[in-house]
Length: 210
Image (tube, rainbow, N blue to C red):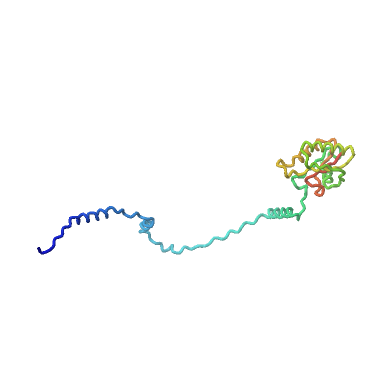
């Protein structure tokens, strides 16, 4: 024999197996970059847009508050810090009332003058009643006895301390009730007005008796 014969019966099967393995390998999934590059294939650069002129906008300056707001804020600061005096008559808590009588007392100007004098403390306070700590019912009884006793003693001006009700969730209950009650006592009461700061201010009232 001129050469050695070699019998390879599985050689063809190996080639078939390799071809089958190649055919079973899945095609790669395109990525976002692939999609982007495909989409940009026909995109051409616009040379004119290489440099776009830019002008920064002006920085907005905060608007100034109106002078009225500034003045009000400054005034409030002075009041809170105690540097400025608060005119009690200009507050919402200030109260005053005068009965309509005869002659001069029917003149609104005369009644206003009387209330101004009463609030300024021009009538000497001869006695006072403090209603702090009393219930509404107790305060009404105490006020009634105090006013009647003051009239019997021929007192001209007295003071009733009613408080401001700042700690009460319902507000100044005793104060509001007292003001209504005093108006109903025209037989004895001629006028009332919020007291000066040195006499209790918004937490007290001067009562002018007939």
